[in-house]
Image (tube, rainbow, N blue to C red):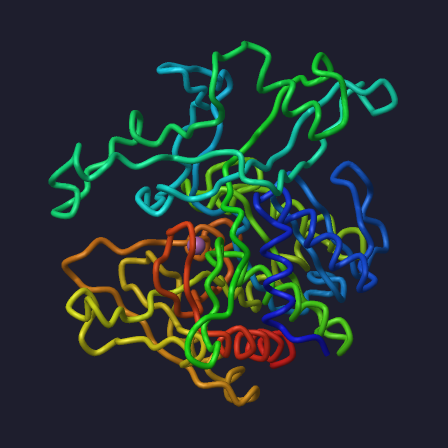
Length: 424
Ligand code: CO
């Protein structure tokens, strides 16, 4: 058994974007014997497989839905807040070349200042050998090439009394010295994916931190890393699915893109994709639609996303009776207004799984005077009419470029998720 924290670090480092995360998830599943299927392919007789589409992936084992038997599922999201490059990015002034970027999701903008940044994404290139004459290629530039420079304290004397950052003007990164050229960015992408600049047709590109994840703290008990929200949960779901397959149990994992921007997309949690895939999996294994619907009515989805640990510098921001500790095990997230999908029955089932795994459980409830965040749980529950709960691992600095969690929670998450699949 490999160390889950080392595995998670490797997964995060290899996954600067949701497209990389889904691609690497596919690699983990293929290595474990799951059959890769293209979205356009028939799913006939594939009992353990997965289908990858952009930054999303659905994987299954044990022909879920066929025969009307209930199954267990885990969902998580592949995307993280950050800065994305606009379609016409290159501009310049003051002898400095900059890229034009747009905020994606609810990032903590200040955390992106004065860091060594790079670029990663997917590029669609013309390729006569590919279907339709076009191919999509991923790239991840490892060297630092960008910086969002903060204004000097001498020019912003109020910076330490409440930093104000305009999300149009103050986040544009510096790329080079000199004068901008119109084809500069296509030329950069072309060299990244090994084509001629004229072959670059289109792209989705985002900025990423080049600093590697670190184990920090007196005994290295903490993990500081980008994108813990929510690659940590993606990793836990995949590892549990691989373990469930070894145990021969039926199970589903869905990894959705676009959670940080509301989940409304072709493969987001608000939408038809998961339901369509499940219908094809059940049908491909001899099950009818009504068997699938019967199975769903007795099934449960665990929506896994990160949770807010109580911040020692700001304890007053947390609900007094629901403090959450890093290292205290998975957190059941409750919200009576359905920002989280947890209900008594699903919470009880997860408590049972944690009991089986010997893992402690915590409970989170948001303050009544602060708006509560949400996740894919309520959206997936609505799309599938499936009983759901929201669970997370405790972290600090959520939506910062570099987040923080306890190493021990990674291991406890893996055990709890495996028991979730194996329990009745
Ligand atoms: Co999240």
